[in-house]
Image 1 (cartoon, rainbow, N blue to C red):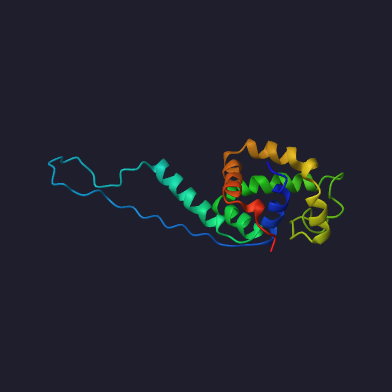
Image 2 (image 1 turned 90 degrees about the vertical axis):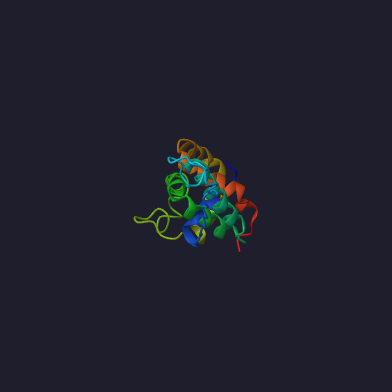
Length: 162
């Protein structure tokens, strides 16, 4: 996982955007064949269709102009994966030796609130401290890996904060 992952996750907590996907399916031409059992349904299997939808979602996220908007777009497209990712980050950031004090009223509160600048600054310094925790949690979850792949494929880490 790249070191920008902490900033990406914090961006997910603060910014919202929406993502839409349009999928069009067309049946093949009916050549007048006498197969009574033939179907006019699309010939691609569901896994191909799912892959196409994921690619369209990721291309849409790549079109976002800022890191927060791009990351939130991927989180909207892959909410289960984003939840695993953010959960691991929040757990690590809220450890006593990390940012528990700086984030006690925001990220580490129950329920969590949008992090303030002190929390963001502290959490952005946790790449080495939390990188392994986030990587371990994410690699154990296919949903999280799909979310992270969206972040990577969309180039979110290279986008400006604003």
